[in-house]
Length: 339
Length: 183
Image (tube, each protein chain N blue to C red):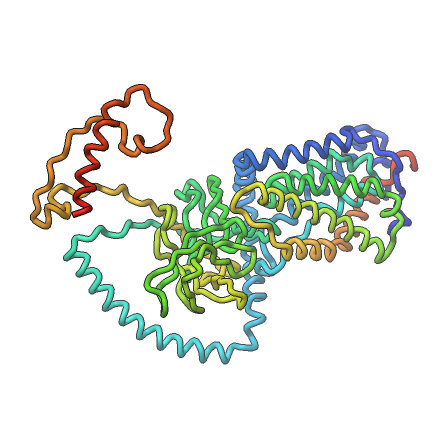
C-alpha cells in the first residue's frame, strides 16, 4: 500500500505544530475548568441526533438482543429449573411482604409517622449506548421538556442503572453505576454478624462490578448482602435496589448489580425531591409530651452563636456581651452534668 | 477516473478537494460515536478518525494539517463524551509523531503497515490515558483510569484499520489525488 503512495515532503501548514499542541493543552485545561461549555455543546449535538438515533435503534436493538442471548442458549434448561425454583420461593416472600406492608402501614398511622416522600417517574426509552474508555453512558429520549433533571436516578425493572448527568431539551445522558466517575452512597443491609446497616460508598471502575469503598475494617460483609441507596446527601431516595455484595477474594468487596444496563430498553427517571422538614409544634416536643414543664427560654443576648467565643476566629468589633454571658450560661449546665 | 484536483483547475473544486481529508475525519468521528452498540457494550468503539489523520498525514500533509488534526480531535472529544480536550491532545501529538517519522511510516507495507498504524494508535491511546490520569491526579477523590478499556479501544481500532484505510485510500484516489508537485 505504501508503495502506491506519493509522499509529499513538505507541509504548508497554516498553523505551526507547536502552536496547535499548545492550543490542545489549553483545551484540556479549559475543559477541566469550564466543562459546562463542552457539556452544552454535547447535549445540543445529541438533541439534533435524537431522530436519527431513534430510527437506527430498532434494528440494532434486535441485533443486541440476539447477541445477548447467544451465550444463554446452551444453559436454557438449567436456567429454567432455577427460575421455577426461585419463582416459588419469591411467591412465599411476596405473601410475607404483603402482610408486613399492612403492619407497617398500621404502625405508621398509629405513630403519625412522616410519610415517605412521593416520587414521580418519567418513562424513557434508551436510544443510544456508548462504551468509551473514559465514559460508560446511555442516552435517553427524555429531556428538560419531560422534566428530567441532572442528578435524578434512572431505574429499570430490576434496579438502579445510574444517574442523569446532562440534559438537553429532548435527550438525557446517563452516567452508569459502572462508570469510573460514578459514586453513590449506599446502605448494605444487616446480615449475620452485623448489628445494623453498613454505610459505604459505591464507586464505579469501568468493570461490571463497582467497588465498595469506605467500609470500616471492623465490619464483616457477606456475599449476597443487599445493597440499596442510602439517600445520604438528599440527591437520591433511600432504599433503591442496587445489587448484592460479592467478594473479590483479596479482601475487597464489589457489588453485583441487579440492573443490566446493556440490555435495558425502557427505563424510569425518578423525580425525587426531599420535602422541606417542618419543625414540630411545641405540644409535640418530647418534654411536653412527657408532661414536663419546659424551661423558659432566655432572651437572646446576641446574634453571635456561642461557639464563636471558643473558636479562634478573628476578633469582632462588638463582642463584650456574648463573651460575658456565655460562661455564665455554661456553668449550670456543667453542674447539672456533675450531679 | 481522475481526481477532483486533476479534473479541473477551477479553484472551487480544488478547495473542495482540499477539504476532503478534514471532512473524512469528521465523518469517521460521527460514525464511530453514534451511540448505538452492536455488541451490547462488550467492546469499545474504535477510533476511526485516527485512520484518515494517519493516512493523509503521510500522503498529503499539505491537506491534513495540524489544525485539521486539532479540529478532528476536538470533534472526537465533543462526540465521545469523555473529559474535554483529551483526544484533541492525543490526535495532535500523534500527528506530530507521524509527521516527524514520516519516511519510516510511509515505507511500510503489508502487515508492517498495520503494525505501523498500531504503533501510532498505541501512542494516541497512551497520551489519552496519561492525560486522563493526570486530570484524575489533580482532582481529589478520583481514581486512575483502568487500562483494560483503553487497550480494548486500541485493539478495536487496529482491527478496523484495514477496512477503513481501504475506504480512505479509495476516497484519496478518486477525489484528492497525489500532491500538486507530483501531478
